[in-house]
Image 1 (cartoon, rainbow, N blue to C red):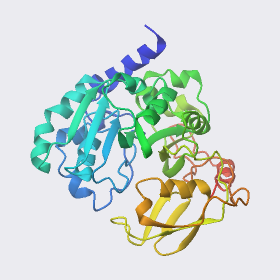
Image 2 (cartoon, rainbow, N blue to C red; image 1 turned 180 degrees about the vertical axis):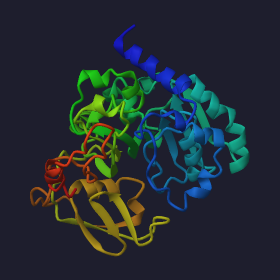
Image 3 (cartoon, rainbow, N blue to C red; image 1 turned 180 degrees about the horizontal axis):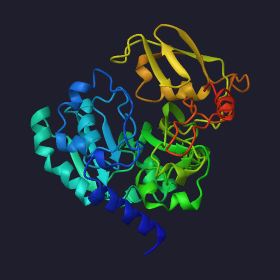
Length: 370
């Protein structure tokens, strides 16, 4: 048995046999702390309790404008996000869930008829397989408008293969919208191989800059950070194992647009948000650096211009300018730790809180405006 096979087997055992619900988790890494918007609560109320009890996500993977979309959920588990998304895509859309854990899939499938009766239609299906080998599943290339994943990429044994598979399955202009756990540094092997830390979404967490490299290597030239929050490791038995590493839950969106560049270039362009995205009449956020107020002319780089124009968001914007002139790098673009949420970690038993956050703060202040 290879190391990758052993890790996959351990993950299957952890999520299929050891965990019977969210109460069994040993850290908060796999707990969704994002505030559930009011419009989403009635949809969550329609999800079967057993499905909700077996939910281990770390974010909210429900971007707007999903009506009629075809969606793929990687690592769908017991199906909570699948059944939530099924309501958002409606009867004219469809959602496919992929998971490698038979016990989780059994829960999802057991309640498929229940949800069909709740919604008035059956637009979901579940496939057993690994997200590292999506090409082996009956999924047509270029057939998905949106692919989502909720705290699963960190569990993968071949993250580059997952990203390549996502790119292969997305339609042109489609997006990979996903939440996951990241670290502020490369983790030592002792952390990576620790069975509990791996199962709790910490051991497999990518150093954030390595994730950006992998994403760009798969063809996603400009990953966009939508939201983030720090994960505090306060459990006395767990905190000493991770040392000084800091972890973040973050949601990214990656677009399948071949013309995107590896930097934010200035072509003198701008967009005007029309205020027509449902539930976002006054303002809509593309990412952490683009909060677009309705009716206001908003200067953008070439990548942002293309993301909005060539995706499902295009009809909700007016576009000013073209690519005929170039004015250099878009002002304010830079590097550094992208996550805005940071601060001193709460103390675990026997371990004082870290009071030196100046380094993190100085890096965060240098992040790109794009």
